[in-house]
Length: 250
Image 1 (cartoon, rainbow, N blue to C red):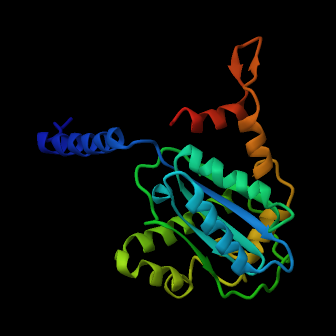
Image 2: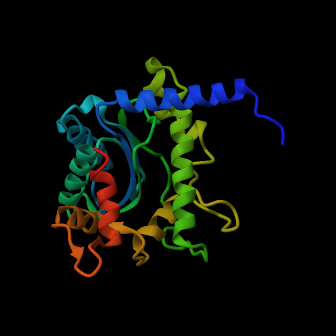
Image 3: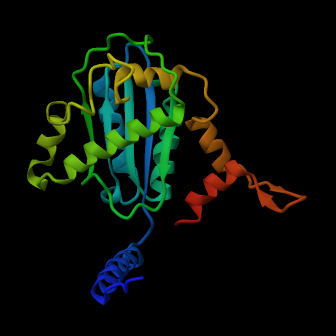
């Protein structure tokens, strides 16, 4: 067996040390959440952007909130990066908007303790995409695969925006559909292709009953309920461990 070169070990140690130092210097741990919502028919999409812009401004330390609200003609994709209380404040407002702005919302993923944020600040962007073929999408793909593909495209969008100079960041957001078309297609025309952030895919996830995707109400109900411990084992239930993984981080 060949010996590992000391220079390689030193470089590896240096990278690990840098990451650990960065984590220690942070005031709190940051999480990334991706949610989707269905807009109530007749609601102005402009009002949605303005509403959540105000919500973010009212969150304590709004300068520490980053993310993107993608507004489709009939759906929204909420991407929020911040501390636990930031995510909860956003979700609680999202819950209040049921029957006001949205029919319902579901949480796709919460990534805990991320080392870096993808977005420079929080913005909303209304996409000029026609709502065609809604409700016609069908697939045999498991829900988790569909969610993974959407999250991958969220990361692609974030990676593209992270490379933009601060002075031209707003312009870059407005040009997303032009610059990152593979992540924001009008619709999925071929089910054999990768599942992207398309209106028919969002409709499919929102309308299809699936216990693996929690609604905002279900998530907050678990979080706001007292913890329950199974007397026989003294262990938390799995769904409560999912919530604890957020609260224990901050």
